Amino acid sequence: MPRTARTARLAGAAALALAAALTLSACGSSGGSTAAKVTQQKEDTPYQGTKLARNFEKPDLQLTDTSGRPYDLRQQTNGKATLLFFGYTSCPDVCPTTMGDIGVAMKALSPEDRQKVNVVFVSTDPQRDTPKVLRTWLDSMGSDFIGLTGDLAKVKTAARSLGIMIEDPVVNADGTVTSTHGAQVLAFLPSDDKAHVLYMSGTEEKTYEHDLPLLAKGVAA
Image (tube, rainbow, N blue to C red; front, side, top):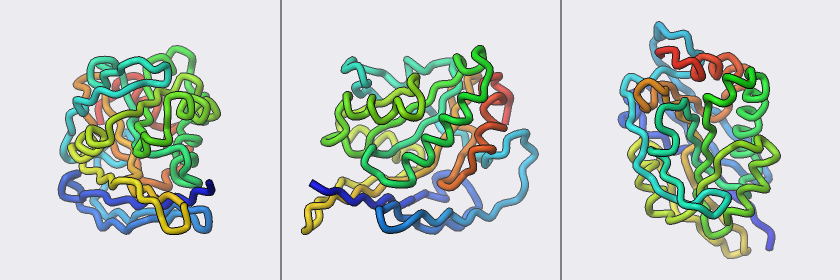
């Protein structure tokens, strides 16, 4: 059955404590994404991503990984730099573009630094994103990327704690599926396991390539 998915970025500016004006962007087979417009004062930070004024706790989230085993996000990424993104495999543009750019940047890391960074993709469409489907999709970006799927209510609660909105997938009259979710990537530092840096949809690969070595080394934002 054909699927056309639309991803809207519903970022909570207040929750993220950013002085930002956010515009919605849609991910669909007939159109690209419009990057959010962010207005803020320049921060004194070595990162090219957006420094968060509030550092968010890593969500207490237990799901299933691509091997079919239970995965505790907080426990199993403890003490490691972690990039966290919520999305789904049938998204035709924002999700694969974001994960693909991160994958290219990860390959530019030294083997030592690469071992220090987790990339975690949490499905917002668990009914279709089985562990097998997730693994096949992620392998094209990074064979060591972590894919998680499971109870959507848990996923929505975890995302909400980070100021990211996720809505239930909707089956349209023509049989296509619409899944709406925030398209931000959050970077958690290994020093305190809190999110310190935000990457909006449309962030260029060179930004990740610049910032990943800093994250691997735990450089303060």
